[in-house]
Length: 60
Image (cartoon, rainbow, N blue to C red):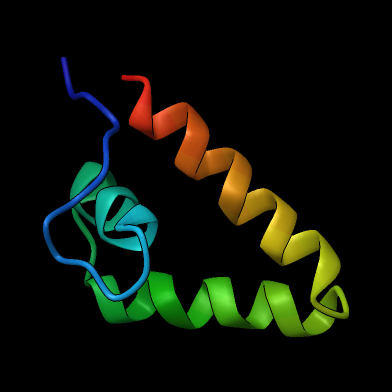
C-alpha cells in the first residue's frame, strides 16, 4: 500500500513532490496544477489547501 507523505524533492515544503510520487506523475505537472488552483481561487483557496495537505502529510 502506498503512503502519501512529504517528498525530498522540495521547492516549498514538499507537498507537490509527495503527490507526484504517490500518483506516479511528473512533479512539474503537479506544481503547474497547484499553481493554477491557487491563481484561479484568487490565492486563498490554493494556499489553504496546500497548508492543510502539508499538515496532514507531515503527520503520516
